[in-house]
Amino acid sequence: MLPKWFLQHWRLLFGVLLLSAAVTTLALNLYVKNLTSSRRYNNPNQIPPQRVAIVLGAGIYNDRPSPMLADRISAGVELYKLGKVKKLLMSGDNSSEDYDEVTVMQRYAIKMGVPKKDITLDHAGFKTYESCYRAKEIFGVKQAVIVTQNFHLPRAVYLCNQLGVDAVGLGSPDWGSYRKDTVMRYTFREYLSTIKALWQVHITRPQPTYLGPFEGIK
Image (cartoon, rainbow, N blue to C red; front, side, top):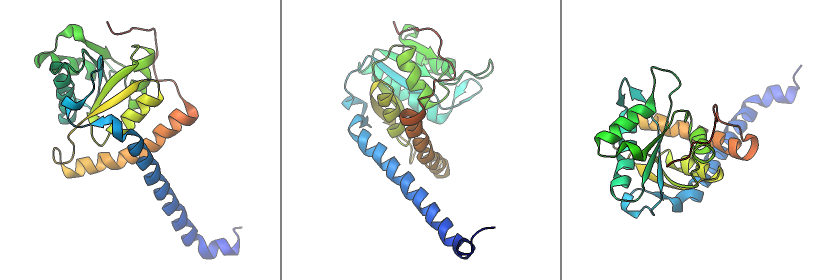
C-alpha cells in the first residue's frame, strides 16, 4: 500500500517530475546548440574548405527526394560547385530493395552537375548517429561539412565531432520553407533525439546496424 503522504501529494510530485524533465531536456539541448554554434553556418560561402560533405538522407517518394532531402542535396551540390568540397558522401536508408535513398540522392546530384565519380554512397546511414559513425570507420572521413536542415544541425555536428569527425555544418532552410506544423513536429522530435544522442555518445556508444569492411573515399 502506498504511503498516505504520497496519496495526498501525488499530483504535485508528478508535476515536479514533469517540470524537472522538461527543464533538463531544454538545458541539454541548449548545451549542444551553444557548443556547436561556432561550427554551424547558413551561408555556403563562409564554409571553410573540406574534402568531403556528408549529406544526410531525409526520405524519398518513389524515385524522387522529399522536399527536405532535395534542399539538403542542393546545398551539398552548391558546396561542390563553389569548390568548398571535392567529394559528396550521400548517407541514407537503403534498408530494402524498394527503398533506396542514396541512389535517389546520387541521381539528383548528377542531374545538378556533380560527376558520379565524386559521389560516394553509404547505404546504411539509417540514423544520424550511424551516418557519423560510419563516415569515420567505413569511409575514413576525419574532417567534413555535414549538410542538413537548421533544426537538425546542432545534433548532427555534435554527433560527428564526438564520433571522431572534425565537422562543421551547413544548415539548409527550415522555418518558412515548409509547413509550420511539419517543422514544429520535427523540431520537437529533435529535442528528444538530442537527449538520445547524448546518451549514445557518452554512455552506451553502440555500434551501427551494419559496419562491414573499410571502403574509403577515393
